[in-house]
Length: 125
Image (cartoon, rainbow, N blue to C red; front, side, top):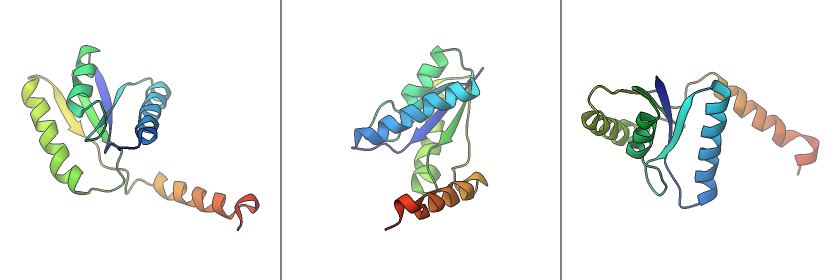
């Protein structure tokens, strides 16, 4: 069974972390997926804890979906290191990393939607 981790940076602003947790719950429900949120820092659970939760729920494969816009230092350096550490702790676990959000064709639609909303008469300055 495949489990998914929505992996975000984490924030000292709890409402930002709650938004990631909420998004993960909606993602799980919409796709009928086994999913957990995880954070690099400043919030819980960590990626290792989220992976352990998925393993306990029956996952044998985990795909980490970065909830990051671009391929910055955390995705180039930190995430691969953490994934390697998790794989070493759990022999037989297959764990991979999906690309960040940047480059996905839906991102343009999202930006256009935000622009249209900003130009709507009720938002005009």
